[in-house]
Image 1 (cartoon, rainbow, N blue to C red):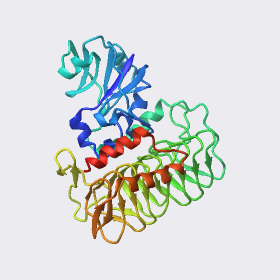
Image 2: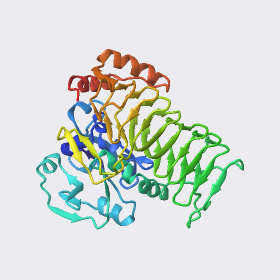
Image 3: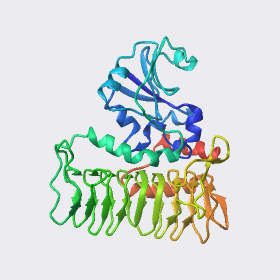
Length: 394
């Protein structure tokens, strides 16, 4: 099957700044990305129908017969759901609470919403419409992802560690999964509310406390004495320390030192300096307002908790303080005393005293140095993508 993950433009706009640099299907929610979840449900070659400027990096391949999947919808892993999706015939669509989930057919029919038949999905699916939906859904998605993970290669947990709660679930699966190559010594794991997943070649240093559900990606590191509260995902190649609560790191980002981060989503190639803190609750306990790029205004929510939302390649200097529900764009460098404003446009440098625009070449120089530390480099497609974002800075 030719599988195409499509982004509704209104949804993509409302998921900025995280969708500035990737299709929504490449968001990490739970242990895996949305795309990786679907790859357990359907089989085929994958491409993306997203913003034009992303198409050089995330290509689109169209065939006569395609399975279009909404990039912001996490699938169910049930056999019944898989049968419905895989059983779609040409012209048929699967809809959940007015949300188009999947459609089989041509590009023209998708754009015209010309469906021969519509089938209702009877299961409640996780739909990501705002950045804060990611951390709200994250704990449930960790548990769902782990339930279908192959854990046959789980390594024994060293006797230097302590487990509080069950060591196996009702199906006999380990509640602390340690992948091959991982190093875990002198840590405390609480499994009463969910599993703890330690990825391949990852490391949990001594004195760390993890309360599940928690997921640690491959080659990621939890520094000594780190406190990781439930519903937290630390993506591949990240390094974290201090106190984390219901935070999601997409990958390749660092918060290696003391400081609090909660109810947050951090993109790739970000760095939070020592003692950076981000409020996740207003002093009056009222619902938060979050910047919405689609409306170019602050959007009222029905949530009390929201911390930092940060786009790719953004940095914060030591002792940076972020107010509740701060949104930071792509390629920013935030530093200095005081609280910066709660919406910071992409490619900004400065802080509470004011911000200036970072020249594009300076951004490329910094990104090159940062990525080289992980053996990565900017591609021509990356440079074209960031050049577009810098030209249309917001």
